[in-house]
Figure 1 (cartoon, rainbow, N blue to C red):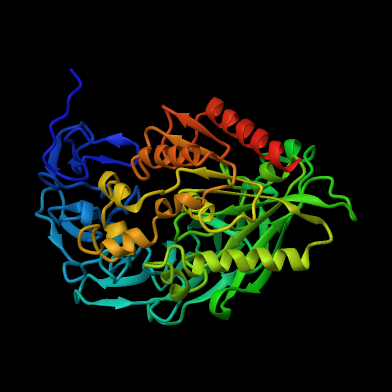
Figure 2 (figure 1 turned 180 degrees about the horizontal axis):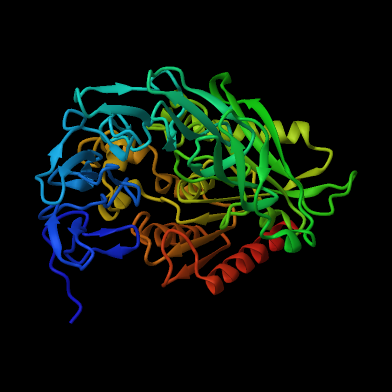
Amino acid sequence: MKARLIDHLMYRHWNRWREGRWSHLFISDTNGKILAELNQGRTDVPPIALGGERDYDFSHDSKEICFTMNPDPVVAVSTNNDLFIASLPDGKPVDITAENHSNDNNPRYSPNGRYIAYRAQFTPGFESDKYRLVLYDRKSHKKKVLTEKFDYSIEDFVWAPDSKTLYFNTEDRGRISIGKVTVKGNDARLIITGGYDAALRITPDGKSLILARQSVTHPTDLYKASTRGARIVQLTDINKEVLSSIKMNPVQEFWYYGADSTRVEGMLVKPPFFTEGKKYPMILLIHGGPQGAFGDEFHYRWNAQMFASPGYVVVMLNPRGSTGYGQKFTSEISGDWGGKCYRDIMKGIDYVYSNYNGFIDTTRVAAAGASFGGYMIDWLEGHTDRFRCMVSHAGVYDLTSMYGATEELWFPEWEFKGTPWTNPESYTRWSPSEYAANFKTPCLVVQGEMDFRVPYNQGLEFFTALQRQGVPSKLLFFPDEYHFVVKPLNAELWWKTLHEWFAEYLK
């Protein structure tokens, strides 16, 4: 028997049913004897959402642990992750960030034991608020925001061995840069820019940073850099032999004026064996999120080189809502999904047509996107006829039905300023389903049955509307995939189907 009887929200998450189970944090000795169970009941450590493997840390004397947990009774509508500390082995957890009703996470004890550094957002319900780096003094119990004046969001961070400085990475205009800040605060600055650098670590002597760097033409390798931001040295070259046999072109950046004359960044990748004087079809890629961004990265699913390889110019835009351009730019998408972001994209296409028409055939252009990018494809269907064909992967089609089936309800409640019954106008205004009568562009729809973020009914509804409107369309449905297509044979089919679709309309 496979029936489920459910009495709470967040009964499934991302790609799995929770089956009435919660993740608890246990302390045991080396013989496996359980000494303490630090959270009780219907709570998760690490949090089921907005959390991860870096959401607990031990003090260096092993006498205390700090961990992240959401104490709210309905986590489906809450981003209120808090930090708790407990004496070991069996102390009672104490909430040290109860005053902040937004997301606190990633606690890290300083090497000297005096501080706990962590990330904090200050806008309840908004998962894309700027992450600040905060310092908790274990002696005075006071907190200090170290990066309030720094306009970018803190991603990952590490302590220097002297406990006086922290190093961090942050999205920075299509890159991931490395910065530093002292415990004095408000002196954050970038020390390594121009790369796409993640997985930050520091050597025991505090003199070098180890990081994972990638680019559009190079998969991830390990690099070493001075903590002063000096010369970067490549440590590994794992794919050297393979890459030597593959022709790829680097990303070209450009800036243009979008809606309201706001500066917007775009990126362009030429196809391999590019020939001057020849005109190529173009594929516009639209990123997800919407609070996300394209960058100079070797993306392992939506890979720019794979899109370019059959002979296409690939254009990637970071319109309103994108991250890495300051919090104001990111926040402007909320409550305005088909507004300034859509106009930014249209103006970006205009700019590309005007400035790269020497090698782009503007009569053979396609568009593709996933998640919010898929939403924007669905939106474009009802608002423009500029494309020969499109691809919508895991796209949001009807915001009201989406609300009723997705799991992290704080997201639509923030983005559309309420629920479908408290603010129906917002859900209706920005739903692509409201514009189905205008659909005319051939579209490939891709959906995974295990996608609980954008449930598969969204893809089915969009495909149904396309078919009923007589629009040439196909549905690629994966019963064993979720928001992403990751199984090797499925990924191979995904690329094969997309390239056949593009070739049908662009070649």
